[in-house]
Length: 298
Image (cartoon, rainbow, N blue to C red; front, top):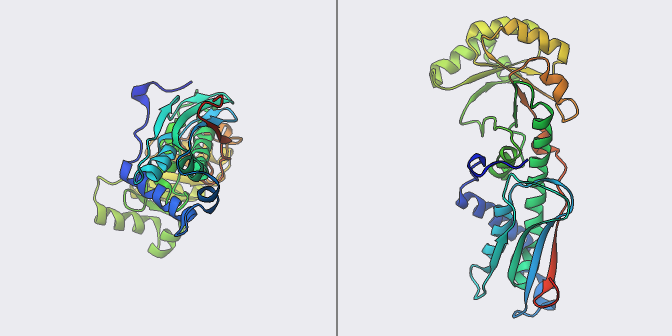
């Protein structure tokens, strides 16, 4: 089921998307440009390009992917018409045409791979997220991502998670405190670490403490952690941990969770499932671009 228009997540800022696209195009074109297309395709040739989902899935990053062609035609005297047939967050069947381009054949061919790389990757994340969200839809649990993202693509990857019905964990080191095992070693104890960050950031910033043993839970709760990240605990240990916390902090299960294991872990009663898998291992959605010449039976 696709979300209503008012429920769709806000995309990253246009300037952020343009920067990502420009880096991707520079990587492909460098100083010499598209040697193949520029030699084989006349500069005046126009064409129609249909972007198609070969498999069923949830779409994310369509506008970002189409920005590729807009950037390629921005500085040339050529018209580009874009018709979007679906929106980010839509669930589509295999064979669905997602968008149609009409314009210079060179730009369409040059931008094809960059467009499909972005669209397939982001739609794969959205599709995997939707799978997990659907698997636990009857349980009182939030499905979230982590900071295990592709360098440079975090804004788009986290947007794709939202398109699939998930929520975002912290965006970076700058917007929430998470005391992980190495922080606790450096600080000396959970109590000392929580006290130090509370003195620095104040009461308005959420503080998460990672625990990987049940005997750490009483100290973390007493220290005033807002969230306990229960790292790599099996469902039985998670159930015991939830009982020990007894609602005094949010409980988050993390570590090695996949779509296959998400429901069993969620049934332990935790408040949040955080899956690095969504952004670092979700399979890409198979998308393609089919090119036709004007008047040739598009």
